[in-house]
Image (tube, rainbow, N blue to C red; front, top):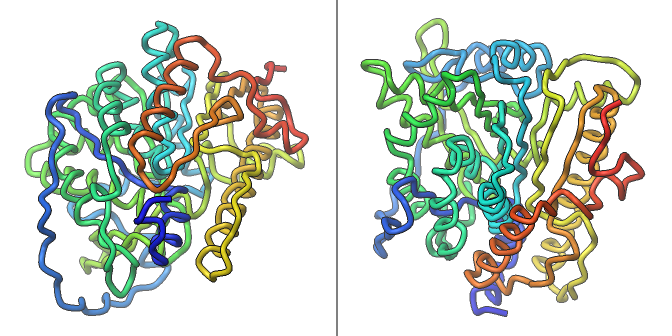
Amino acid sequence: MSGLMRRPIAALAAACILSTAAPNLSFAGPNTAHQVSKEAPKAASRPAERAAFTAADLAAARPAGLAQTLRVAGDDPNAFQALIDEAPAASDPWLVLSGGGEDGAFAAGLLAGWSEAGTRPDFGVITGVSTGALIAPFAFVGRAGDGPLREAYTTITAADVFEFGGSDVALTDTWPLKRRIDKAVTPELLQAVAAEHAKGRRLLVATTEIDSGRPVLGDRGAIATAAGRKGAEPRALGLFRAVVLASSAVPGVFPPVEVSATLPDGRTIQELHADGGTTAPFYLAPKRALTAALTGAQLLRIPARSIYVVVNNSTSPSFEMARRSTLSVLGRAMSAAIKAQLQDALALTGAFARREGLDLHVAEIDGRFKAVSPGPFDQRYMQALYAHGRALGRDGAAFAGSTGATAQGDAPQTLARR
């Protein structure tokens, strides 16, 4: 085990980070990876508490200087249905990318192999949570995003993401990650995303609003489109970057991201957004719509016939001796909780797919991959996992042999439409 993992605080951080995290994403290509300065910004004085606001204020708030339509409540079936109904390409296959931290290398490799095979669908809707949210914009722009994803998930180290010694709200400081995101999320990337959005496709990313505890679904294609309007570019670019950073902000481990929002009366409030994986390991639709399917009710209609879910994790139990320490036991318990949440989400998704007559395909990191990571963001581990995902995508074997929903007594991973 690495020296990093032997540090007590790292045990807790690693347990959380492996459920979500953010790589160094670069849209410039394989030879232009940005290097993070070894000097961290000087620590700021403790910030003042935010101005008080109510749940009603939060519901009426919109991103400062931008339209309310750039996001919807992620747990509202009616709002989600309206968003999808306005997307002409929503009847094309959907791609759903889960959280998983460094294990996002699996999805990055799978997408590259899929491109090489020439069988990768043109997805009408792509959703992402946590590390999946970081992959999503590059998946959205097609094969052009494969190279940057390869660089991101095969060269990063823990030092590129965070450093220990955080603040009153987190164990770590993510200044290295923020600096990389600011360099990677460029106006050129937003232009490419906006061009795909104009074709009727949708790029949706989930974060968790801390004050309400509710998921928020950001329409990143709409944000990218807003960046092309005169006077709106700085705010839209800033919001796009903030959503990327918030998507990886594991509560308590990484600091939440403040998003300025404007109320109808002109007041400005500061929302706190954190990792979308806090409320769901991946996002297909509002949970209320998924659970309604268990009783035969229909709260939502998805126009697509095929849904591809890429799980950057394993749903199978994993053995690791816990040490006699609070953090070691807590880390193992959190790992078990994350897998249980993932299994439940897959079971709900399987039931919903059967109710709606969808072809559901799930890929996960199953027993075919044997490597074990010695610590967070280990390069050799990520490179091996990337190569594994790439081979499966190239050979058409990524969506075969998984056990996710099946392990819960649900439908097989490839569900024939009925």
